[in-house]
Amino acid sequence: MRSVLFLLLIIGVGCSANNSAPNKVLLISFDGFRYDYLNKTNTPNFDQMVEEGVISEGLIPIYPSNTFPNYYAIATGLYPENNGFINNSMYDSTIGTWFSMRDREQVENPAWYGGEPIWNTAEKQGVRSGTMFWVGSEAPIQNMRPTHWKRYDGSMPNRDRIDSVLSWMTLGTAKEIDFGTLYFDFVDGEGHRHGPDSPEVVQAIEEADALMGYLTSQVDSLGLTESLNIIVVSDHGMTQLSRERIIYIDDYIDTENLDVYSWGTSFNVRGDEKTINEIYTRLKQNEQNFRVFKKEELPKRFRLKNSPRVPDLITIADVGYMISTRSHVESRPNYATGGTHGYDNLEQEMHGLFFVTGPDFKKGESISSVENIHIYELIAHLLNIESAGTDGNINELKSVLK
Image 1 (cartoon, rainbow, N blue to C red):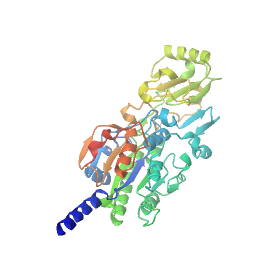
Image 2 (image 1 turned 90 degrees about the vertical axis):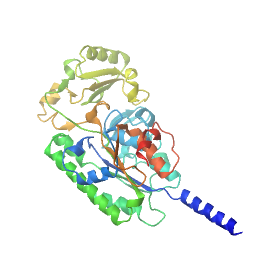
Image 3 (image 1 turned 60 degrees about the horizontal axis):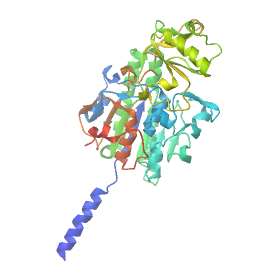
Image 4 (image 1 turned 30 degrees about the vertical axis):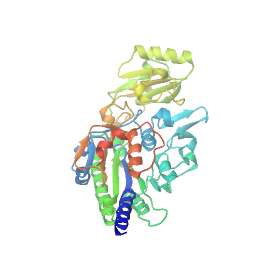
């Protein structure tokens, strides 16, 4: 009888150990934090976190290397043609309107958002989530929202953002979360205004490092250090602009009556077959410091051309160049200064930051650059939830796990 009881006790202990709750996950992003920014100045807090975790050579964004499509690619693990988010601004003939990241009504319109964001996957399986300003979390996608979410407010102090999410993680109630996100935009802002090599960007990097020091101290004081996995990312990198690197598109074509979708790092047009063929031929004959494609010619690796939201003709500037018109540039003496992004995602200057630290990760190691669409699968694995099905693959990031 004693032998049977002893055997049952061992089995019970084993089951308890195997069924222990997964550690919590915190996904943090610094908008526009280029892959090499940690080498620009002293970053003791970042360095400590990296030393205790795993860092990659860079995080490869999806094309276009812009904010909204990349944050939503991270959230869903899907390429643009599969989640519908092809750029910061876009037109959908079915919806009959434009999306702009500054249009609050459309930002909260679920019709723009395909796929399933990781917070929905978690909530469906009983894992509470809280999002602080993550693209998509302000819209009721699939008629759902995270347990806690915030409408974007750029004036909210950065430390308050940290305090809010950590408070959600330690509520001690049914609304306590196991997955949270944090977003900071000030590094990107300084990069746009002053360029990636400016002292202002260095100061922003140091500010980000101080925030990570504050986060670490708060995590420790709340007793979360041994049960919190932290994933730090950025959506894209940044490159320097110059008035010496401007492509005057009106030197080649008449832009007056065109249905232009975007200017700058790309020049995208919608039109009838005759118009598109004429523009394409003229630009192809003068293809210098840019590449021009009809929609069906887009490189397969962009994973864009199967989306109905993609315009008919796409012109992509080489990194560091901007596409504009002479009248636009001549009337704006500060145009094409500072920094920007949005270029081909394989350009290294467009690559972002990626490192992980916490109880489920290895320590003191590095990996090669990785695509951001794999992050969804990593989070699902850490939370022990079933993936909704993505373009990502957990095998691409298994090397960071213990």
